[in-house]
Image (cartoon, rainbow, N blue to C red; front, side, top):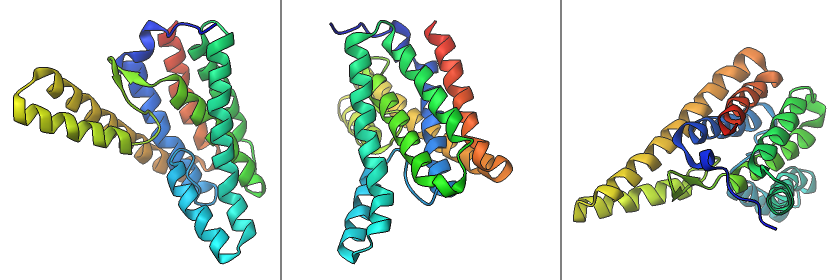
Length: 211
């Protein structure tokens, strides 16, 4: 049986916190975990293909693992959605736990750390897919950029106030992601590997907003 979506899960404030966290996670894994993207699996797939063509199997594995972990994270979130009440809150709690553990993982196990971050971020992007009723992604920007520009063009052509609202929301989400990435860059300089705990803090606030 599919569990209902929490009414607060689409509101701007929790979505803002999730988006800041998403930007921070991507910066963290790229700057401190071997230049691997936690969220942008397109980049990992491109680099995976390049590594396979070069016959660099060790490098290929570095990019294959987060892609596989991301896929498993989507499946895990779907399982929670079908089988567990308050499933979105559970997703965030699992994400906080996994990211907290990542802060203790040494550089020698960067591949494991990247896999855990990709798994948790996939759960998040699967569980939180709307902001104020509009589809969006909290851990990547390409879909938000496309939707924002589409809404802006429609608004400029028709003057539709709803499209103006959509465009503002999408561009705000993109800005928040960029701010999260910048915060991640500063955090890793100051804290190194435990910088991911800042993401845990943002997610904890989101849990509180879900009640």
